[in-house]
Image (cartoon, rainbow over all chains, first blue to last red; front, side, top):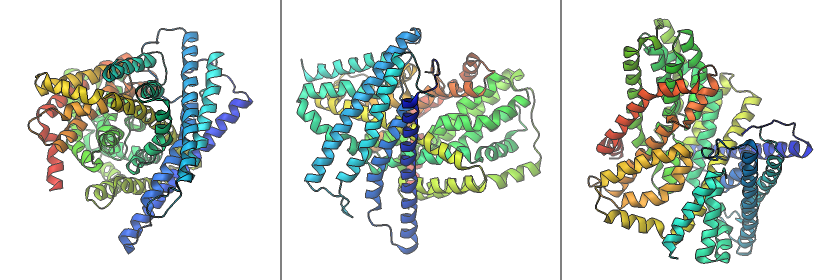
Length: 170
Length: 441
């Protein structure tokens, strides 16, 4: 994917840093899931006392963690494309197609962000909670929004960069 | 326009978008969303999307994917690969081509705690390739053996492909993992055999052997025991029914982290790198999940999968011929698209077709396990099959002075071994199902 590596400007640097920070937060959530599950297994086997509601916490945390990974994936240009049919196209054509691709990623991320927000409102109105320890479902819904929103921002930035002939990816 | 033809049109639109470099996840999402709103309306689509993504990301069993990724990343940085390769070479090094065989064996061992073939190839190649070149192994044999050996990363559990298959088809992950062992071990033995035959026919590719002493063997045994311990505690727990795959993966992640820490393989920088590489790969997988889900929700509305299943079951072609055709179709499709996305996209359509056919009178759960392993083989072959074998690309990045065409030439014996194994697995489902039946009863 790398065409001409440019020194990212102020916006690029800020976006890169934020994707890294958000991805690291997702990673820490994942480590947290592992620690929680481990503690629960130890508690269950040693004292026959698992952590109440561990499965629910893992589910909800997993959804939030994964949404945190998405902006970084997009920044790294790791969303898979098929380059078989365009292998012989000119750099300019590829750049334009990649701009279109990133633009679409951004639009989809915005759509999902908007709908997950609506989902959060709905869960709040219906007072939905998890089964065992009654975590309000609107909270993890809401926590997914930053990941999708940042994905949209990053995608629009990359689309713009590809259009003017720069590769934003590292 | 019937629902069925709308389904076909969407499929065509999706392939068109993929051909012009639109990310695969989005090439599935956009036609899926458009089709959904055509078939049932804009507001139902908006309603569907309210909960769909959260619903997909918050599945308990899905958490095994990032967890096993993280475990693999820790193992990669933990200096475990050198211990494995030294051990394998102490065992096999004295034979002609033995160091290439040792590379395969080390890949198999690493693959049994890592779910990714890319990580397995890269990790083992870093220690094995310089050693092979030191003994004047040809670039062709050394890179091909490691590219092929690396595929054992997904053949042997934990395996990302199997986890995705299990989630898409609602099968038991532990049973699928068990079913993969015998085929995986056959694969490793097949590769070792392929090397043995190859170096006998063309000895110039492996001119020298290493002669490890017995003290080196003993020393290497001491170094590999943590890997055995991690393997036993993760999979002993899962197969013994003591813990769920997510719990096993959590235990494994923490144990691998500790091992890497104790061996001083892990510092702050590498820890961050492990988190970020896990984020990148998991993000990629879940983006595709999101797109495939949208597409499948739409395809389900169009009833294309069920109509196709009835159609195929009614044409009167022998089921085994259909299965062979499916496998060939997958390998060809794998030439132009990524194997994981291919699976996520096609399984919801192809799985009902397979389940609607009769193979040796297998009961449904057995049929699902057997088909899952066949799918795994297809993905594995795609990793080294031209023109885009991912593992060959990885090797090319590591062994910069070996041209990719050389690696592709070297891969041929391994592909022959793959083809033979594939035929055996299709004709004798018992190979796959034996271990599951033995341990489950």
